[in-house]
Amino acid sequence: MDLGPATQRSAEPSTAVTAFPEAESAAARLPGETTAASHRVTRSARLRFPGSWPLAVVLTAQALLSLRLVRADTAFEDESTYLWAGHLEWAHLLHGTPLPPFPSYFSGSPVIYPPLGALADSVGGLTAARILSLVFMLGATVTLWSITNRLHGQRAAFFATALFAVLGLTLHLGSFATYDAMSVFLVALAAWLVVRAGDRQDATVWMLAAGVTLAVANATSYSSALFDPIVILLALTVAFPKPGGKLAAGRALALLAIVALLVTLGLLIGGSRYIHGVKSTTLDRVGGTDTMHSVLASSWSWTAVIVVAALGGVIVSWVSQPRRAQTWQLTLLAAAALLVPIDQASRHTTASLNKHVDLGAWFAAIAAGYVVDKFIAAAPAGNMRAITGGACVIALSFPVSLGADQSQVFSTSWPDSSAFTAILGGLVDHDTGRLLVEDPSIAEYYLHVEGSQWQRWSSTRNIISPLGTPTGGPSDKAGVVGAGNAGTFAMYIKIGYFSLVALSFSDTESLDQSINADLGRNHRYHIIQIVPYGVGAASGTYKIWRYEPPS
Image 1 (tube, rainbow, N blue to C red):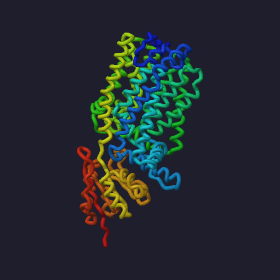
Image 2 (image 1 turned 45 degrees about the horizontal axis):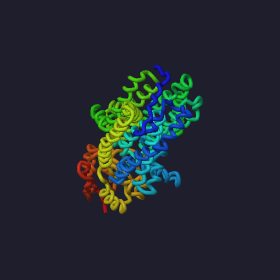
Image 3 (image 1 turned 120 degrees about the vertical axis):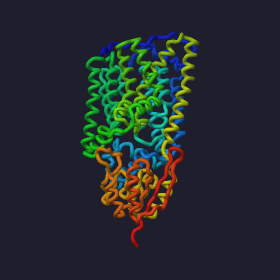
Image 4 (image 1 turned 90 degrees about the vertical axis):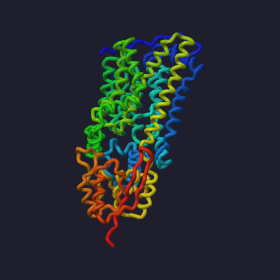
């Protein structure tokens, strides 16, 4: 692979009317290079066209489109799980309250995002926790702007951030209280740090900071490690043509070593539960039954705008400056968009696809911004170039509309649980026994006091024993989200272990039917409530039984 000197950007004649004057003044400078002349031109351009307001426009649009979703629905199961876990982590830290074995089945460290999300939840409830995610996603957009501006100029930065900010995936993660937004931001920050190192001879501090940030990102969400090679190779390509050679390779190797060391230390400190959690949720995750076509088609429908533009940027760069550092870099960034779709297609699962695929789109957006910039620059200088730039801005109305519609679907695709939690809460208030609920995390989150008594709650995936230890869970082949053992549930129901049972016949339908039959055979259990929840396609019914002990 030839990573020779990158072809400099062609200096364009200055014009009185242009979409992004500062982009026109970014004359042929490589990352990290500045000249006195470029400083003078940039200062002049900023007097006429302040460089910060296009970014402000993008961030404002992103914030408004995400904020409209923060109250669109009650908590999703993942949201309630992590926020509830965060509150328990604080109770453990402050009061020594015992904890469930979160590390053994969480797909991210329970001591990083969940406590942060719980703090926000304590301040302003679910809305505040979702706004925290928005802050992280806005941070990812800012880093995207900074990187693209440094590599390809302000005009490319505007279109890169605009395309990313209005993706339905981005808008959804900005209104979704899980670790995903934090993970996206941390990986983006690590990428910014390696790009910021530029052509420095000594980039040790930058690589150390990037390595620590990337390791924290991996701990926040184990699946983010899929993008570690992208960040490491980005550190390599940024270092060409200067400092190049051994120094460039040294950066990549140093970053790899730092991340590997920190992740290994983290697993050793965390112990067997963390190692089991990483294996069961990420490395050896049980595959699904979705077709490869459905996985790839879903990814395409959400990211096609950026992917097509990014591929166009790669083609343009290969035609105009083949085998140069910038061309290899753009190819790397565009390829990042394919990692998650290919990974999940190989495992035949769309689970969490709409959360994981956004990070690849973040990298590809840099190449997308590059090709739009080149397209505008290809127009004759003057009014024609201004018209071309304006047409590209107007064309953004399509991804804005598409992203708004898709994000609305993402954020309302689960049932509203308010009626169920209200009724169950009234029952639990007058009950001190053990509870079996199909998806208990939502009720545990909303029923704060009762929810903290986690030893009382069992799910159709696992029974909690009187000592608080798990039993009756799924086999290893079923994975951490598999249904529990029907025979074990039958045994516990026979002895009246659960005082209340609530089933929705959705996530673990086969086991629910078996439990339903076991409850019917035990004359001590009686149906006391049938609770409808949700609307339309995202709707169902909870059936609630109560155990009546012998008088």
